[in-house]
Image (cartoon, rainbow, N blue to C red; front, side, top):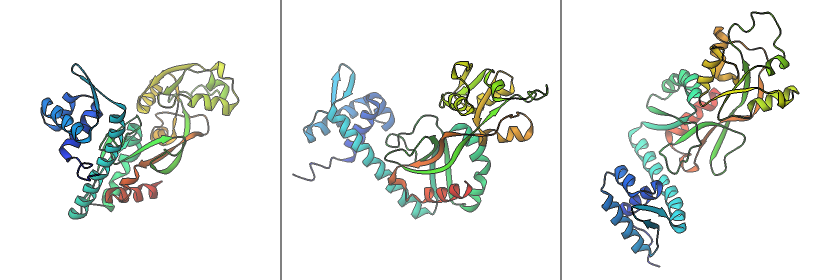
Length: 294
């Protein structure tokens, strides 16, 4: 087998990878600053070189074939490693490292950003670009280097550093203790219960922990962001069950109150990234700082 035949040019590979990721020649053309016809020609040239049909064409629509999807998955990982190697070389040459970090929005604003100045003090040549993400990160189709999120276990295929267990605390409006009545688990269970969309089973876990019947649960509105739930509790809409690390400031200032001890959920906070990024200088520096903080 001719190795040159097995190594298409980078322009052909980039055109195919972008078209495959979007399943659209038009969006691939916009991403790569090319014309749609140029993308089409490059994909056809790649198919001819490989002797494979990578796309099915239906009018103006294109869809990956099975072999095209397999090729895109392997190629995406390979291009990710190439980009990572380039970033490492550039960082080594310049002495300045850049980290593109995805994090949960409320964790980023409430915990990470107030502490990040100490990272910059220790590593003045480093830059951390923060990207807010709620959904899971696909490291093969984004330019994210690492992410901080919550999970029940390690994520297969990724390097995972467990940072800390998620401690949930019941939060009440600031005047909830004014009547002098005890906030027992039974009384808490009778309230309108607010929840965060990415952790829909939190109240169920808490009810089981307290020995309360799930049928008595009064679930209220769901919020995409924990910060929005916190504001809803402050406004008296209902009560919430949120990570203590994200609400400690409000509790300390008396803007919210709590009537129950923190409850350990089944989830933990993790720093995760693909193995190819493990030796990225900026990630090594950030990882050491973060693990020391937690």
